[in-house]
Image 1 (cartoon, one colour):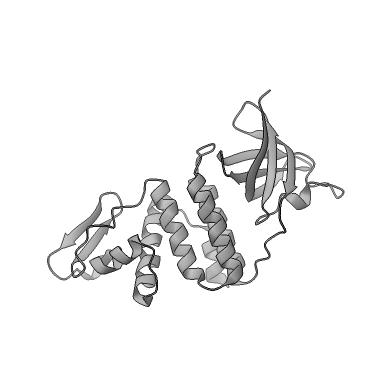
Image 2: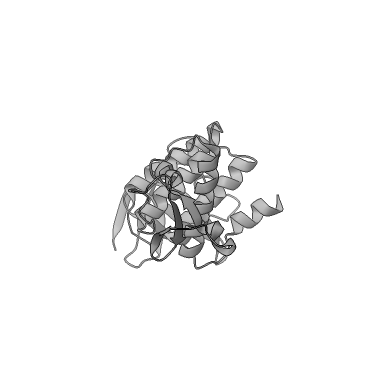
Length: 230
């Protein structure tokens, strides 16, 4: 039976499994998303339950030759990151994005670093929107779903086709196209994650939503619905 030891990880999502266990999606530094059964985690006296919570940096180990692993160890390496209010909803959104878009055992070490970055920014609260846009940008780029944002002429208007990229418009966009239109200078700023300009931040949010919705097959995100209800 294959054994894996001491992997840096975070919990993305968990759900009940059988009578007393949990089925958990972990995001690991070296192996990407790892689905695993955490046996006995729902028992009242479970020692492992506190370690398999979102936003807790942990070291995990697992066994198993199939895609669904069995967790053998989970130990916190730092205190839980306490998120509340909008920051908590944003953290749930980031976790849901990763759980929905990553394929099991497809490693994304740079994205793992950006995940830690966005969690730290959610705690500090200095620029939550800028941190989210940076993370979405890096996620789409890592997954190969980010159209080319460079080599754009600042004063030109570009129309987004999520499957084919950007097309230069020679005239004013039609009403139905405006949501998918961006100035070249906005795309150049987004390409370098420069969100100091409010209009760039708004344009980036619109662009990332268009691309993420397409990536998800236009199936709604539960965390986004929570935002709307709040």
